[in-house]
Amino acid sequence: MFSKVNSIDENKMYLEVFGDAWEFNDTDYEKDRTDRYIMFTEDGEVFGAFAYTLYNQRIGSTIENLYSFKENVKEINNEDKITIEITAFAVKKKFQSPKYFMQSFFYMTQELMNLKANYCIGLTEPRLSSLLKRVYKKNLSVLKRQIIAEEDGTEWVAMILSLEPVFTNINQYPILKYGTFNVVPLT
Image 1 (cartoon, rainbow, N blue to C red):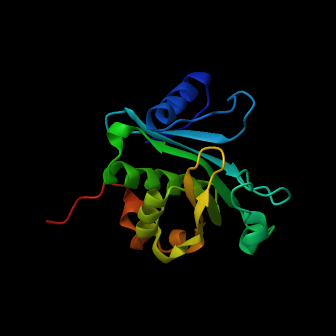
Image 2 (tube, one colour; image 1 turned 180 degrees about the horizontal axis):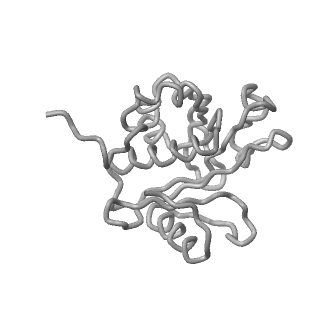
């Protein structure tokens, strides 16, 4: 299960994930209108969090300083298409395993479907980008590798996910259709 953050108490759970996973400077929940989500294990424990924002075609993404999606990705500048930007993602250290990363992708995909998104853009760490590529296959394109953030030297990969083929052919993606909590391994 995942839940949109709707209160200061839920935001504390959201921030706890980031505090556990990596150093995170957050903006004020009361002022920031980014949609935040917390993700739960089968037992109801918070294991991860993510945040989405609607891509603004006028000004570009919130991360234009690292990669100019506005200038380099023409698909997302189409007024008839909905592009969602992943602005934050983390899984608590004790849950950093393929099972929980895959379950995260399931939850995130479910919300992208609910939002009727056509594209999803974001910057990811190199290891996570490899895992995402295995899940979304040819629908996920790497736009640029080895983007280095000046403030902390973190390395990022710019990516775009074309969602229409994923949603249309969801049966080809059992992890995205059912999640890892519900997929029974073949014996």
